[in-house]
Length: 248
Image (cartoon, rainbow, N blue to C red; front, side, top):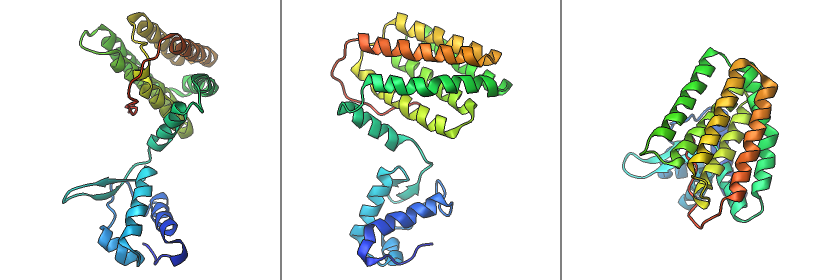
């Protein structure tokens, strides 16, 4: 599967070869790479170069390195974690603002809702209604937290993107909403009235999607994004650790 590395670019050649094998399907999610010792022999290079290449592949989200006797470098299913981490860092460094995030959401979420209303089948509608029911139940359960509701809210947004049928929309929607979930601890928008308003928004969007009213779904989604951003602006921020999104 692999060839001897070019000595003038050992590190990059290692990364490129393994990445190419993942992209073209020779290595599939769940497959385990050979041990570091075996990789050293295959690539005819140093263990240090192998470790550095594995580190970069892990940062890219292409592999997961597990420790222990049964551990090793495992090929991962492509995810949005590196994108989410990058966007979160831009927010923390104030290179991206909440207004930027809202403007971006407005540019895609109206289209996502509109497309979902045109492409949803009966199974899709049933899935949306189940997510909506679970979100409503969370609001009524005393032992559930606002964070639980926001996670369900985000799952419904991702479901709409999946129904729209464009994998780019799914990836971008997941990235943006995982970032929003990661911002949760910086804000105090946990008031019941705000959560119930969000829930009514979701009800209206699902109703429009179910009825196939694409422009109404677009309008409702845009209004939902704008008002959510206004709540984030109006709520006081508090210092708290940033947590990785858990939208899946």
